[in-house]
Image 1: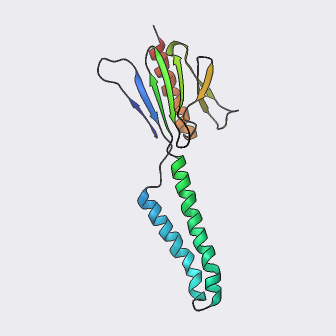
Image 2: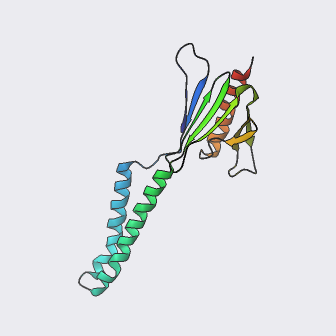
Image 3: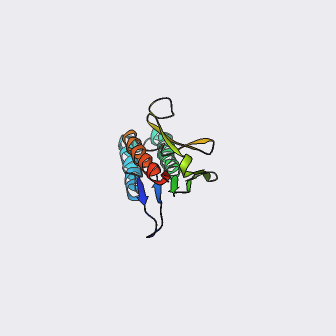
Length: 165
């Protein structure tokens, strides 16, 4: 799953959760995809070798390769989101590191934090939010539906365990 619980040093209460979107396309996979697309796009051009039509269509094919290159790179940059939830008996802190724009932070007293699962009505099904300090913030919206359900159960248990006096 694209999230990981980390325990602090021995003797310190609390835990930390790191969440990130799926990263399914490696740099090597990106290179292979672009090269494969380029080679497959060249196949129809073999019949046009020696004609003026080849030179008329070649810029469009190169624009398509460039467009795919830009789109995949743009998407890869958008997937550089990292959410860090720090849970301790006293404080709960969520920091979202955005690829474009400033970091977003949320703090609350752990005793008052509640984990909410919105089965419908959110931007995605089974939307997980944290409520506390007069605000409600999303967590893990980029996860799959099953991963959000599992995250909700784990997060609810962790918050309950830490907020007990």
